[in-house]
Image 1 (spheres, rainbow, N blue to C red):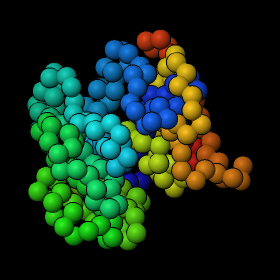
Image 2 (image 1 turned 90 degrees about the vertical axis):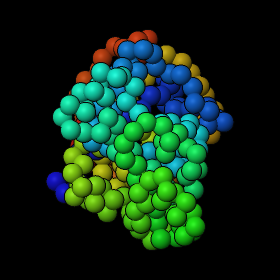
Image 3 (image 1 turned 30 degrees about the vertical axis):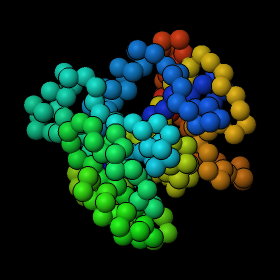
Image 4 (image 1 turned 120 degrees about the horizontal axis):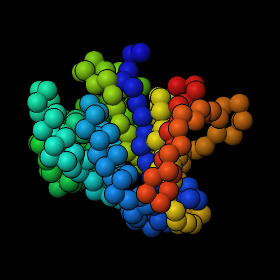
Length: 227
């Protein structure tokens, strides 16, 4: 494979929403799932999100457990995985948590249309990689990450990035924690948004690998058949 193993991890409500109609982050899972996600982070070489997630949630994507950070240090790794933002226009705020909290490397993937001054400003906080013309070329980005030694890439969304990766056949597995609440709202983001498939034959098929009760919901693990 000429790219990393890519898996999406997300929590969604019973009606498939990942946040409210106002795109406000909502607690969907509980302590057991938080620990699972932290373990996934610690076991990954890199974690990737889109600029929409930076704007809506402002996550740091750091490994929360000191024990897990120490285990990474013992094997010669940074205590946090490489943190990546897909940001075609270089609009990530320089004071974003992902650029300022926790030790480790950061990478902002931008396109050639990003304003030079914006790229230079982000360059003081992270490596800025130009990868694509009008928007970030995800296939090229994953290829370049593979060359850098990234073999396991965790994707934490959001819905637009998930669509871009899945529709291009760039995702191997999907973890979805389904919580015990209804959020509603026809414009609230779902696990995968984007343009959507119209022809049934083009729709992505999944194979259920496991279903595990967790907290007050269920964790589903899927393999993407046509990755």
